[in-house]
Image (cartoon, rainbow, N blue to C red):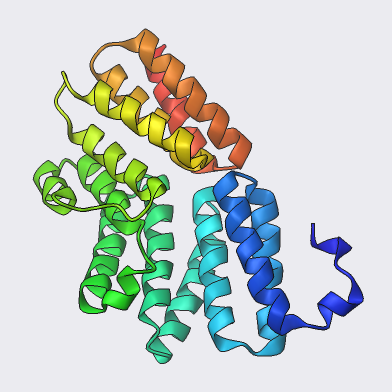
Length: 259
């Protein structure tokens, strides 16, 4: 993807890094994670060459989030750890929160619920103490609610979600999915279907895949295996296309259980 950049562009790292970073974020959201990782890596290298401190921190967190989704645990922890160290030195609370979100997502995808809760609760504390961080880090609440539900701490998840207002369609879908996970047997289907509508509107495959997975899990646990398989198959297809390996493995396990 970046091989076609001309010499003049490569000689302007101060503008190249933010541009490639924006491209990486767009590709990640739209579902081309391989291209997103390539662009994010080049943005980080460009920022390092130009010694752009803020862009280095941004680049590290951006790469870490993509690697979290892919399940590249060692790389994600390395990049997020460096981001947090640099952000602490610069009192950059937003980047500390974003790096923490990446680590929380990684642990959630790997099924390490205690670790996910610990990471995401740390992000919550940062955002509570530093409102400017909360303006940047917006994914942690839905992920923390997800982890708490899976851990069996439903009341804490409800308290977290209560009265929380989304700032975007993507955030609305994530929060609604968490509420659907908590809903009683006679209500979760309606909430999941509304979440799927929000995912379709936002056009972000990863959110769609996560919603299909959660819906399928609830259906399987209520002994509606035929319906569950349709959603789990859809989730698996999304995750395989993205390269979201730990999430794909979860979908495979659920499909095997629904057979």
